[in-house]
Length: 254
Image (cartoon, rainbow, N blue to C red; front, side, top):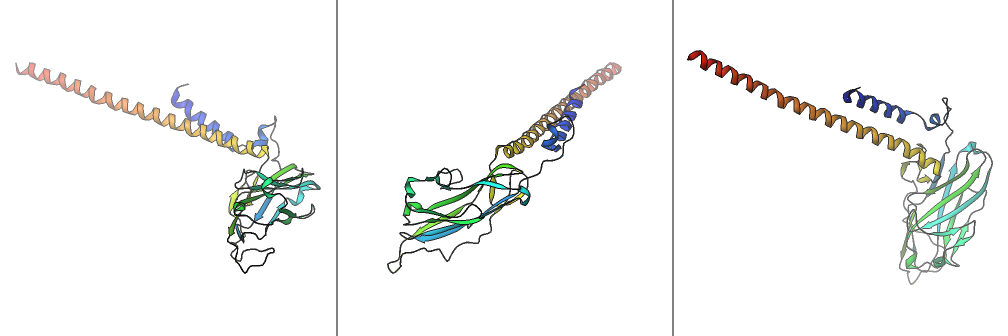
């Protein structure tokens, strides 16, 4: 089979593999699509509080109603950026050394909302805070997800007339989280699923698509080069024919 026929067939095969659901590639027959775990995490975009005061960073989360019984719910908080250091964990118990005796989690295991309270605020506490939830569900097994944008905390200079106590900024931004597509292909409210299975599902179609695009580029480049070679031969053949006719005319004149 020639190259012009082989490349289109290869591209068609790769595109078909891209369209197949991952579950159908795991057995000898067409399997039913696996149920997806729906999740969400909401945090306020921005908060501010005076140096020396305290702040509560609220959070709320939700998950699929058909998850069945839920156990071992854990709340964790990261600092600075999405993959930053953990400053707080419920299990195993952890409090970052920079926040020793200054953190309090207002949350209980049967609740879907709460807040992280930071007392005696310092200038170096300024930055972004990301809430992470982990649980074991009866239907979907272990699941873990985290806010993407987090909450950006700004520390202001303390006013001389200010009295100590919990404060929150009146200039808090809207709580609507940025829209995004999570790894399972469903829309989420500012959170990202962290389990390994979801990462594999995203990586496989992406790799197949890249291979298909690369194959198409190779085919188009080959076809273009062949066309240029054909055009190059055509003028040369015509010039040779004109030269023969010229010599014949000279012979006839003599």
